[in-house]
Image 1 (cartoon, helix red, strand yellow):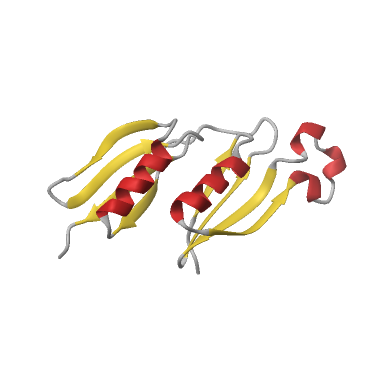
Image 2: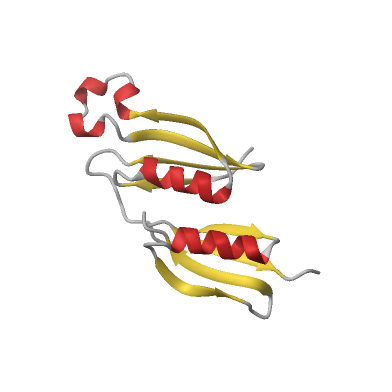
Amino acid sequence: MGLNAYLSFNGQCDAAFKLYEKCLGGKITFQTTYGEAPGHEQMPPEWRNRVMHVTLKVGDDTLQGADAPPNQYSKPQGFCVALHLKDAAEADRIFKTLGENGTVQMPLQETSWAKRFGMLIDPFGTPWILNCENAA
C-alpha cells in the first residue's frame, strides 16, 4: 500500500508542478491533459490543455495532482503538505521559493523543537508546513 497527497487546482496545475519539481528537486514522471483523454471532444476547448493527472517523484515520495473538472474546484482547506528536512539552508531556500507571491502564515524560524519551522500558502493555494528538526 502507498499513501501520498493528491492536490487539486483551478487551471494552475501545470505551473504549480513545474515550480514544485524545480523547488523540491523532484522529477515529473507522468503528466496528461484533458485533451489527451478519451472523450476529450465533450470537454470545453479551454480545458483541453489543463492537467488531468500529474505525478512528481521526490526521492522515495510522490506528490500528485490535477486541475479539477469544470465547476468542481474547491479551495484547499483542512490539510497541508508537510516537508521534513535535515538541512536548515535547504529549508530556507524552499520556504523562500514556495512563499514567493504566496502568503506566509508563520515565518520560517528556529523553535524549541526545530532548527526551522514555518507555514505558508503557495501562490497556487496549496498550504505547506516546513519542519527542519534539531539533531537528536
